[in-house]
Image (tube, rainbow, N blue to C red):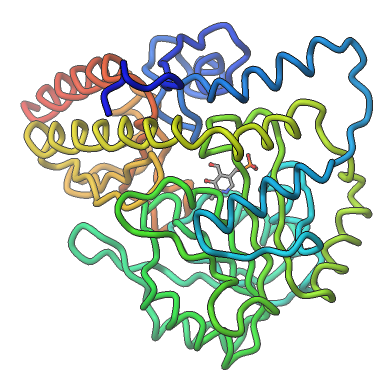
Length: 394
Ligand SMILES: Cc1ncc(COP(=O)(O)O)c(C=O)c1O
């Protein structure tokens, strides 16, 4: 369907001056203002109309008191999970939460002890590493292996690490590698989890942004419901991460009780006046918008990919199966991580995420966020090509 035929179409909007981390903190974070921001994982598109309307309606009432989670909140999550993934979630398995990163910390706190081994598959979204370290668990790094344009899991290493572990933290789909784990891969993980009696924390926040493949919630695999704490949110899907509203799905009573106690200890147990109606509206009415959004992402991925392959052969884009992020293999440029960062910021004038922040396994890589307009991407590619050509001439 073309854009003009879709009523609820994601529109690119200028976000400068709106208190946006991505657009308004460039000087502070990267040392200069004149950069095209293609870093932190939020997009530059308007949220679904129903979400905007739900927030407007709530805002019109002038009291912004403590909010509770109404039945419609649980219903919206249940319906979404069942429709999209065939997962029949029960009402009492759902624990409302603020943001996913907080829940990752709480899950580790709730389900393991200081010193316990926690497996993380690197390169990985940095808060996974930080949470394990902050909570003084033993970080067990299961490095992903780059095979052509795609990462795969090192199962032999995972089997070894699992022997020393209490918990496995999955990122499914995986940020930053943009892998959507296949049924075969997940089944092999299941066997290792079962054999070693592990608890699984599955961050599925990117589940709705997949291309072609169908996301499989880890907890739906045989025997996994009783071992898994799943975290999800409409925040990446509908571009509403600033509303800080997410949820956990924990089918096992004992794990759920432990998680709930950790939430109570943290004091994070009230809802957000705007996030709650936004989640309900997004899950109930955001389907058409999401379809259109995914098409835009796909076009942007192809555009950036083709451009890089043609013009910057030593910056190699990896295959994107999920997310709106492309992981760039820049190792052929033979720059240190500091030099690579400096090349992108000072020469290309682009703000990307440095791969090394995703663990040592990310050294020599950069992550680019393509959830923006074609015009912004075209400007970014133009800058990159100019800087790259100059760098090659040196
Ligand atoms: C895998 C993953 N988990 C969690 C988050 C952040 O979620 P939240 O804003 O709910 O903490 C991100 C954002 O980039 C992410 O990529």
